[in-house]
Image (cartoon, rainbow, N blue to C red; front, side, top):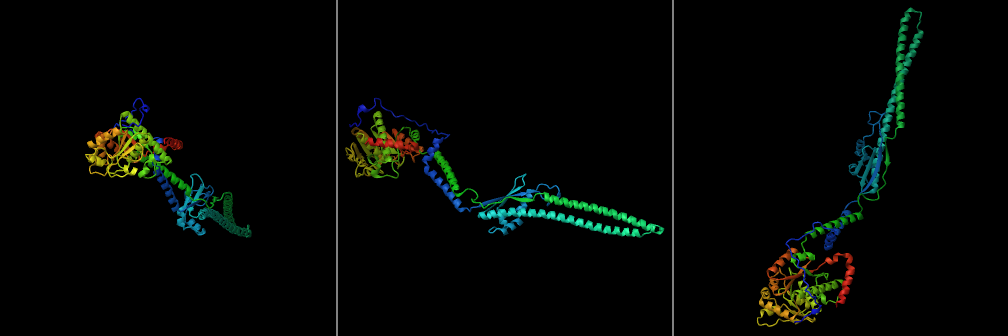
Length: 572
């Protein structure tokens, strides 16, 4: 038997890998921290990016489809006015609710509509006009929106000026009407006084013509004197009334001159330069931020609902054994044929160097397991197809051979053989022909040009591959290979796709279960583990393929990659 490792280089005590037993339940962190959010974002960065772009796109569609509205504003002071007041001497504060209705009336809108070029009809103008006031103030605030900034300023200024002009006109008209009425009253009293003065002059002339010595004229004289007294009293009353009216007129004129204007424009609007609401760029930024937040939430929710075994702890809990190796993705696309043999690649890219270093660490783990537990044959399988078991089997075999171990790689996936494609060999005969031929004495082991590495092809696809792998002939073949080579690597079909792997597993020393961190969930691993253990297989470890957990720490990439590249070059 060939021994690829010097016994003196092995530890004095066998190194046992820790057993992680699954207790049937997964413990989850109910209070996720910042690290959990960062992992969720990193794992689903494309989802976050899609939400971000969707937010920006929606904001762009919103801004491109909307009509920009420009808002202009003006302010009007409303002072007390005798119009519609019962007491012109002591005027109350104006009722701004009433004044707002007057300002926003259709009559005012009609004036503005006819004066402003490009303005809408009166009712349409009133729809976009807003008049507000604060309780306790005497100021009306006007605002108007229009797609044309010039029109918006002209309309709101038109409402302010028209209202003020109307209120001042009404007030002046009130004072003019009151003054005219008082003047008419003065004129009427003067006319009555003139008539009385005429009567008094007549009475005085008649009294002067009466002979006071004539007894017959005594009675006439008394009558004239009594009439004079009455007329003089009436004249005194009219004189007092004239004085009262003249005083009222003077007071009204003084009141008109002493009071402030009934309304005044405090502020007129200039044409606005920016539309109402947020600008286009700001809306794009807001849309992007909202999309980013929604993407982060969606990524975290998807992460919490996802049962995929993405991390080593998830795999160890489900499988019940330690993860003996983590293989990072080493290609941007699907690699087929010899390009998948990364251990034979001379590519110096960071991805390839990392993958090679991962297989070397896996090789060390397999060597420790082989030495400590005296296991020399390993069945490499997975739960379902396309998880990378054949690629890992081939690269692991090459890595072990490069370290000086004599290795035989058995292609036991007789349903869909892949190992032959990777190494570019024919598959005319192999394992299936050997197990089906009772007279065969030794399997068709072929050399593939790699030191310390031999290969047994799968051979033509038989009708009963499960029976062949579970036969005594296969068990004896494994015993014979273990006696000839240091390590036997057997690539088998997925456990859930066929019964081949559970049938072959008891004939080998241990099972290595390949887990795709992007698609294999824990429930699937639990079923695979149950099927293998029920068949009598011994799971000695699991391999986490396409492991992206190392790339979550952005700040440590550069130094780690440089160190991995240097280590990989020294290992050649």
